[in-house]
Length: 259
Image 1 (cartoon, rainbow, N blue to C red):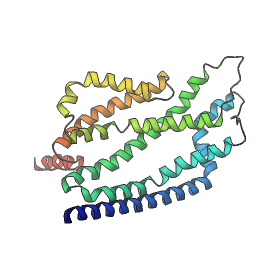
Image 2: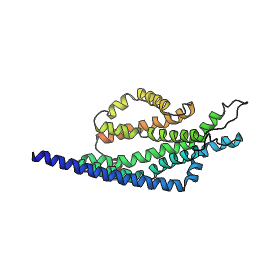
Image 3: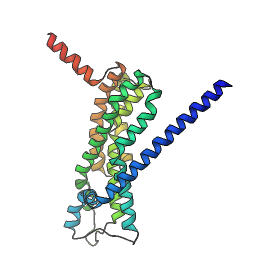
Image 4: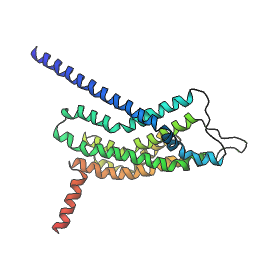
């Protein structure tokens, strides 16, 4: 009976902590949205910049199809921008809730996998942003001569956000494989032995998750993902050895100095 009471008390304590951390996260998300609202004009220009050259060339502008549309677009963009802005704080709150339940051995790989996942996500977003002007130019090449381009603001901005998010998530491939290796589902030998089939699978995944479904964007995603897969084989091997990249580099440096 006493044990049941202790378990209930412990559960209530965990739920109270979870509620507190959720409230803190929501408050910071609202603050992030307010900041994004203030800088909305700059954010909107940033999101629409890849399409600007096509609009200028076709002597056209974005189209609003209703009175509430401008307000709804602003709310959606500010929500996404606010989430991105305060994502480090939200991540810290999540980590603060999860960390006490992990052993030191379980915490060790997460400490370097977590920042690497952020870096990979940003790499995917930056790459997508750089290639999007070429993708829009490719799309514009199919506009009939007797048609006028008048893109919807909401559809265009949401398309850009979806593309950026798709590339960012796709670039998390090494992190996913490392976590799967940590729980014993995959290993470096299996990845190395089946690399041909996995490259084909990566190409198919790139075709599925790319919102535009055009060949140019698919290739721009599939090629770096294939390179990341090759890197993942080495990272998975490090997970199997229970070592970090910095420890591996340090050991190599010591060996060279020893020679």
